[in-house]
Length: 534
Image 1: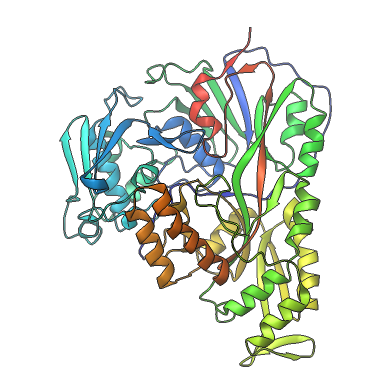
Image 2: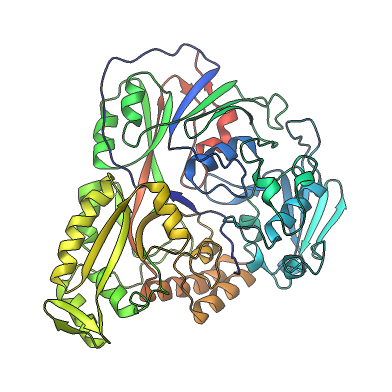
């Protein structure tokens, strides 16, 4: 299966809030912090990490070639870059950086990482095939043992040549760089199993080094004394899995120093009662969705998907769960993106409109349920519970859909099962949230034919052409037209129904300094700056 760029998307749990209050403990150790996060899966490789907790930890252990700034712009990471030949060639020049074993980060390590991403056995979220790197498919097919368009100029410089110009390269090259010396001995072209065996024994060039890992429970990281930007002030960081909804209660008990939670009404109310903590709210670029398997015999019908959208009261959901800290989403895109558009169908809640949509497409009502070509409008939605969004959404949605002549069966599973079922193609429909970047080509991973995480099995040739055209133009005002047209096609076809775009709240002790984060840049990218006030 062809895979497309999936460089900024992260799967998030939609979270339920249950809180506990007691007298706090006092943490006086100025060199140790505890972050309370989600369950850890233990995939500590930036090319393979899928869930937020693993990605957080990878951001601490590995530095990326290019980074995304607080404002959402591509900026130098391990390397500076420049475009040549009108954007059909990029030169990357490495800074003086070392892996935690003391070896120097070289252009050979970058070439090695690119080869892993082009390997036919690679099954992670990143995929660079849509960029048109010269020789990419020859390497993928095993016809060549090198990617022709990747040239190691010397130990600090590497060039990447493209078949056509692409403005998407800088934002696509935000993957962490792996050491060929450490990982290369386990790799043969077409077989990445040896590299995956090192998932719990990572070695990178980042701020921290993994010291201990207790499966699914906690990870202990120690400062990389040779880190290129300076030794982290916090010498020991514990990333601890915390039951959903208990993060703020544990902060109050003194069992942690900082956490990141969604801006639900209950989280906000509890955060207000926390003394001695700063609360930083920001647009998270997180979009909640109801996804569909568009290859499913029933849900392949666009009219049915549109009817489901009309019969889903998204505005009421947002108001009840998030108050004024979220907005109804009509496109799967960040509001911070330069291509964001509201010139699309809003699918305002309208039961009669849902019925009309079905009848205009040939559905007939029988015994209170619409059917077409002998198939009843009945599907199963898979979701995680307890979960504050789902627990509000599902019963109301089920009832409203029944009024519209559509039966929705609900299958409750735990989060890991949900991930497994969706990605192995055995779910008809599901509830997911995605954290987007402001690079518009980000969504190609979800919706382009053969996209790296196109779990919707969705395909539209016009959309594919728009993505290709958007990449080839370098100026924002030129790219904007193509991606806005792409969003309109997705809004019409509805491989998924956007529900909301919400804020996040970073909660941390008021004794901490230099804590920064935005929807574009994780707090973990600049963790080395954080220190405890005197």
